[in-house]
Length: 177
View (cartoon, rainbow, N blue to C red):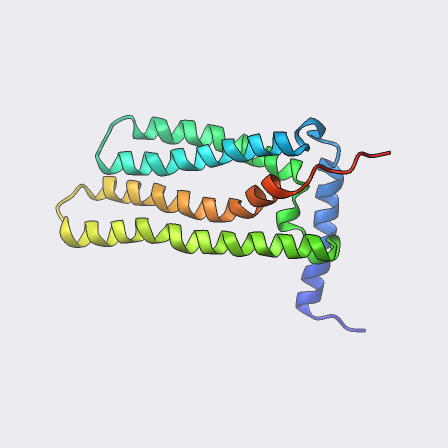
């Protein structure tokens, strides 16, 4: 039986996912209950919101906007990593690794993530279009920095949404016997 490029890539994804799952399966056991995962979701959302706020602050040229960016990233990165580990990286798992219910839940969460990405990215895109059209004399680097932060926040929100939704809604894991 010959396999095509897509089948070989899917096999590679499964092998890579299994290796990562083996590395992380025992990590952060105390963060796997629903209540703790929800705390991580709130921290991730706060970090993403802080990133968007930093973009808005940068529009007005506030000198401490980069500090807000740094704090938001410091809050976001570890909590995002912890959330993905605590959720078993189900948001990006290859289909052969999930049962039918998990696939359906993951696909619904991904659909929400895509819709969020599309809708949230519109605001910074319109900001950049209108800033370039109606304020051509504005500080170009400040405008680009602000728009870039807002786009980054929108893209990251959409990309993180599936794990955040699954982390918020999935029931507690079964106790291991």
